[in-house]
Length: 377
Image (cartoon, rainbow, N blue to C red; front, side, top):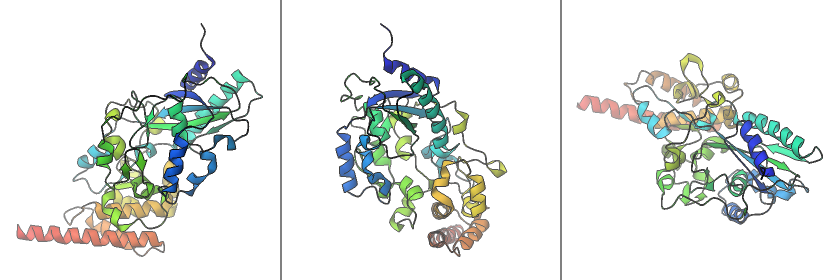
């Protein structure tokens, strides 16, 4: 017997370089109700775009929508995880952590090119009369739910898609189409089993307690939300828990057992981009980041997913991370750190000036404590 129609779709996706692919009918699943409950609890914070009803009713995106092709692309690299990298940076000056997914080229663009190429091939096979549209994390689509019922994996306790073989370092993109494509799962209502079991490492490791219970994330406490989506001041009671994170957070993925042996990508576009002075977006200098001008930000982060946080957000985050850095008088960068923070404290951007003032108080206390300790010794 020859391959099913779905097999050719998946095969085309793999030829385009995707790590995983599957097809699911554009219908409603039980997860939509859970998502509605999550919204009702206000856990989305300022992310009002998540309230778009099209996320819960796919047919609102297009009246002829019939099938969803879900594609996953591995972005993992062989660089150390954040929980290991923090120790490695000790004694080398204050550094910040950028979430692994943002180290290289803007993943939206990488996904978009691959999805559009795949969409053209599917159109050639299924007929040009079919409507189709690709979304690279760019529209009101609940990608993880579709991925689950397309057989790509299960949604773990950290609320991310998990695959037994490749872990969770996955970008998700979808192609919505009016074509009747055969689903990947014979019974879509029976997705891959949840293999999280009794493990709760992600919940226990979250420094801000954002995973309020298994499978439930209060985004308002999540470091990724605080450093990227939140536009104003970061709540004072969460700042110390943010540690050295300046853009996103990987901790709940770093500790996940399924990611310990996850394969690394060969895609050069996801490797840490180089910066001036021989550094990169892997653990960049906090002093340098806190002193960035808007013009420098635009130049450095052109073609990067980090544009989303905007200049004021990144500088705000760098100031807070400097306050958490533990930098002391003995650190060669101490004078420059003070200079940068004092300049930022006079910024006309309130979120920057207030964060810099908070950081100055923190590191001045650290400097005083360090000086007293040396005197006592």
